[in-house]
Structure formats: structure tokens, C-alpha cells
Image (cartoon, rainbow, N blue to C red; front, side, top):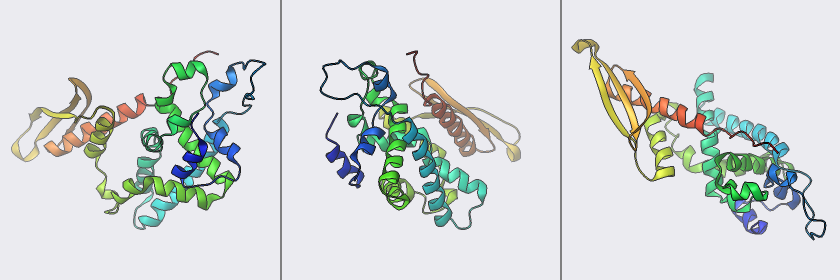
Length: 245
């Protein structure tokens, strides 16, 4: 595992209890593997699942506070939608990759061999665990500063308010991050009289359909297709079932 001192610099937080950061980066697979009796390195006794649980709550509170403060005229539904843009596994995985958390994960041999350092669920869990570790090592203010620092580029995009929500832009970012290409939109059907047109759109990538949508304009149909694709990709990014131990 890489030097935690280097990671502290990336996180912008110097730990008084470095064991909290180590715990935040320890995957549960480590505890299920038997360490040799002659090993000079003691086997960890705690994984990051408890810190992940704790960090999720801290993250939700920090995000709730920031959207509440920055958008004073937004209603409950709009605030919930804004918070969800940041508190989803795709975003958390992206933030973990920016910090290179995968390089610092402590994994069991099997998890390591199966690509655990780049697995989206492991990275998202690690980010939440780090948030929890910073809170416990410092306080809520420290955890909040960390969260806001990581989200500054995304928060700047929301300065125009809740109406700046852009499903097509979000989908494009998701596809470009993974594949370096853009999705393709096609209008598959239009019907109705001129004063009440109905358009149907499909969004595709590499010849595969990602989502469909319909609306009274081409733009609305494409937006709804993008929303359907985001929902599908988000569902696919949920944690994989754990293999039997």
C-alpha cells in the first residue's frame, strides 16, 4: 500500500490518529484471509464498513447544509435533487479516482487479483470512509471542508441555481470519463399535428441503446432519454454482490 503521508497531503488533512485513515482504506476482504504466523505485519482487525456507514451520514449532512445555504429559494424537492447530484456512487467513485484512493487500498489477495483497486463500489466506499475518518480525527468542520474542496468544480457549475440541471451534460461526462467518447442521440419517431407534436428519442453508445424518452420537442425527448440512461447506468454501478467467503 502506498505511503499514507502522501495521501494526507492530497486530502488536505493531517491525521492525529493515522490508524483511522488506515482503517478507512482497509477492504473487508483483508479480514477473511489468514495471515501467516511468521508475518511481521499484524493482520488488521477492522475493515472500513463502519467508517463507510458513519461517513455516509456526515457526507449527507455536509451536502444538505451546502445546498440549503447556496439555494435559499429552492424547495424541498429541488434541494433533494441537488444533493443527489453529489451523493451518488458515480460521483463518489469519480472523486475517489481524482484522489487516487485506489492506490492506497488495503485489499485481500483475491480482491486485488480481481481488479478491486479500480472497482467502483470499493472506491465509492473508500471515499465515504475517508470522510468518516476525517470527522472522527477532527470534527464536522474538517470533514465539511474536505467535502467542499473535492466538490468545488461541480459546485461551480450549479451557481446558476437548480434550473441548471443538465441530464445530457451529466450523461456525456459519465460516458467520456469511462470511454473518452460521446453518446449519440437519434429521433426515432415523431407524430401528431403541428401544434401538438410528439417526439421520441433514443440515446446510444457504441451501437447499444442506453435509454429512451419522449416529449413535445426534440430537446425534451433527448433530455428524457438522457435521464433514463443515467438511471440505468447508476443502477449498474451499484455494489456487486459479495462472493461467498
